[in-house]
Image 1 (cartoon, rainbow, N blue to C red):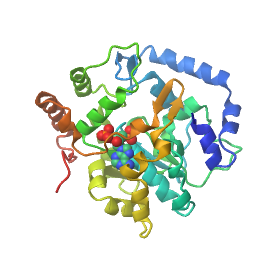
Image 2: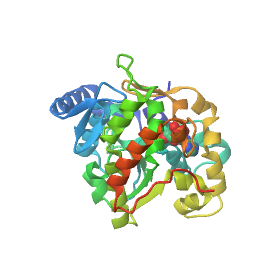
Image 3: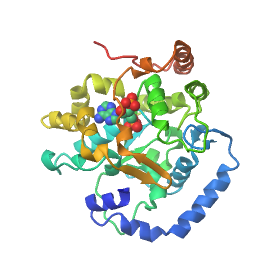
Image 4: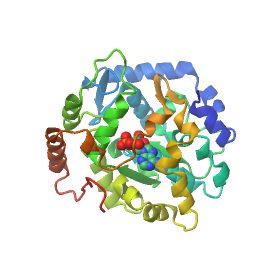
Length: 340
Ligand code: A3P
């Protein structure tokens, strides 16, 4: 079993264990207790993947995610040079993490011995809301940080730590057709659900999703939050769609890399076919607190339009109706399939 701090240690000299020692478990437990007390006062709903989800600043979280969000809001200090990959869960974050890690470290690693061949993308790019659970204080005053740090987050724009908004750092948002996100999430949740919980039927899950109750949901408020700032600050916030990335990877990766030449190798290295067939992604688990997930579960099908194989006409109508209503007038639309 591999946990992130030791991996970070191997990639960022001097990082990892030192950070954990500084903070101390006792402090983390006291903070967690305080956050849980706040949570007990929040509106709650039956969770998809855990006993309950809590509504905080208009969005729904599991208790574990919410602890991480509260911690990040209180402590995280972004710098102008940081890059944040933002998305709702199941929008293709694993792919984006691999692509951006490869792009940003293109002069640092050789393709034949690239870290993506031996580490899962989630082990290479830290999830902001898991810093608390890995007990890694940020920033660590004793550790020289690389100039540009790459982070990932599912936190909605309006709840991001202030320093991310104020620091002028760059944000890359990836969104995906909500019906594919829903199906991907529903299939993924089968691997997470607490065995003591009655499983949520797909009909119940659609109903919850359409009420806005999904991980880091309402889905539409999450995408619209980043969509609006991408229009307001196009130089800072880049809005990408999974379907566009799939349709024309070359164009979008060139745009992200800002350079020609190595993009073909990066696309090949990060392709679903390549990553999902690597031993490192076929075996082993990722863990933070009680959250344990097999790495292979991050690679299911990687297709556009798989929702057609899972959703009934009634479910599609329900999802389309709410999305059309919420996105009306925003200029944001989703592709239902790849253009041929
Ligand atoms: P499916 O469940 O539809 O297959 P996230 O990384 O945000 O959790 O999203 C997971 C989704 O992205 C899954 O979708 C997964 O298969 C897909 N995915 C993972 N790696 C990918 C890659 N390299 N290229 C395209 N899609 C990928």
